[in-house]
Length: 329
Image (cartoon, rainbow, N blue to C red; front, side):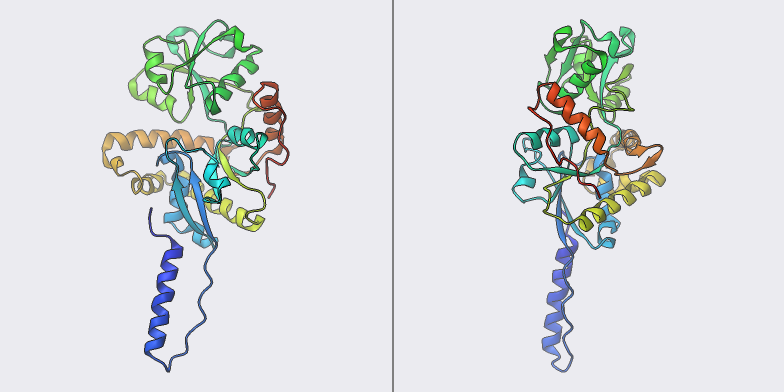
């Protein structure tokens, strides 16, 4: 990971102290207080989807907010909230539904900024299948990574939206093979993300229909956001984090090249034209998810979290909705 602002400050202070000792007649200035040091976890390998965080670091937006931020990408098998709960991270950018499930099963977590205002989970069917909406799911085989996590909750939300139960469809665990499973006809429908699998299908030239899994006016699932342990950081720090990330989103929307160049520092293979082309498509799809009423925002909707808690409880994922799953700033 890159050198942080905190490390630079420490080096500068040490150099200043040595200079003062060498020239005894020069008064030594009081050391500059360190900026609040934060580690933000990103629950996936480096990817352009995280570009607001890269831009906020590289463009000094966190520093302008008086924050010294280090970014930490999680390993493939790492629990989304393990490092946060172990105090190895201060904030993690993670799925809202998984944060609520974790809160309801023993963790103390709260979301203070919703990064994806639109839930990214969708169902995808071949355009030639005739499937156009959740009402067409009855009797179909739906492929998903497994009976766990946000992908599974996405399928449950779709069935709920259609007035169906799990017994009305065939759920098939296929791992992360959605593209091959659908293109070969092994399943009728797959679960995916509008800024991932939808882009992959477009790259292959395979025509798919993207099926919304919930009513956008009253969503039952909330997209990824900024999650922390309540009380670990004060509201002013959380507000400053949101301000830096939001400003990064605004700058990216005006100039997508900022995101691509910042991501290249994390993903050097984007220097390949084809990979850069895919990254730009992912960025375009992702940036749409930041918008509410056409504008980027990190605002948290407590009512949506309340609906999500009730839905997950009704689906049998949790026993009861957790209290205090959001922080109002």
